[in-house]
Image (cartoon, rainbow over all chains, first blue to last red):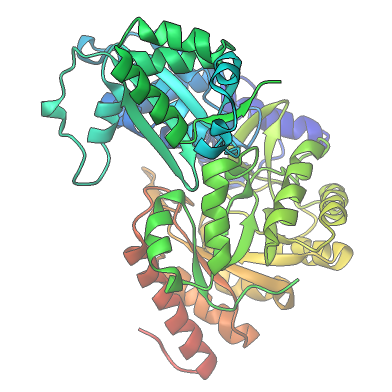
Length: 255
Length: 284
């Protein structure tokens, strides 16, 4: 048997237990199936742990055993094709939505979506941001007609439960809320942003969310402000615009 | 290209970042898996750059699947090259194993037969990696639970041939050697001299778990999830006495990784053994 056939047989045995035990393995050592089971367990266990590294709070919510069982199911359907595991798991939150979860944490897929967004922001290049001075160079009329590109290391989310608050409650640190203090009925608009060596994140109001979503979709600033104005007054609008400018959320103007 | 400092270090995880930032004197060098930083930029790479500013770096790959019968993944190799160019690591290493088959990445280091056929394949792959990276790499001995019939070399001989033919070095994982020796009913202490010890560029030490079977057989599982066990420390001492040289020594802890306090305790023990073994004494 060629080396390739042997490796194929072992790979199949590990993942599906379909093929026979590779014939050239020395069975005199005894317990060959138990030995090969360790490789199979490693495959599922190590990839389950890799998934847990990307989704630590999702795991905490589900409990480790439940998470491992779900990870195994996900791995069977969506195995990684590359050793770059920070890019494996993009479909996990959507997949999780289709799984039967306990009623009280039926929203867990939204946490997985938040954690995936956090991870992707952390591994995306932080572009140079437009500074307040850059923006002041435009006349007001020019500015209103500008289309801005948002920082590529950023993400906007809307969740029906306060996932960012819940996520914070699972982090170490004294300034984070405790789970008991969180109103689970509250929806949340969230902005994640890469800055230097940190991922920043905020709960933002509906007006700022509408403004940023519109800019992200290619609207002009005038169009984006109009959408945001439906959700706030002039003062709120000015505060939203100042937040955007002062936190380096705009990366460039579209030509 | 500078060599790694011949001191003890640990496998860096992002959870250590803040601790290490606050106390960069903890170690002279760290090791990371390049795969954790490929296809990334932004915050994660900024953290690695910060770490690299204060410490020498070892890139220890887990995804090249060098011992696969299938051809090398050139795009993966290109990404590794980009990391090497960017971070100028003091060492680059990979495994004597395969981990990829038909577009599925197994995230495990799978066993191989020690045959002339595989040696030839392995040489081609190692030479290709070294050609692209423009530098020699280190190859790590695996931990094994199974053995192939018809092996034409012992593992040490196989690695010796690989070193001679390609100019690569050996990353000697003494926990792997110990684990394999128990699982395959060999004696790690007797096997030590089989390996190309003059070509060792780095040593790995780690913990492993034990699975007891009904008939009393013990399977040792290389899970990097605990402290280094006493027989592996003894093997480390024997290795040092055999070579008579200090060696860059890494504490690996990948499962339920503890904080730096636990890792530095392990590093201190490695330093202590290195000092006493080479002075001809006994360490605690």
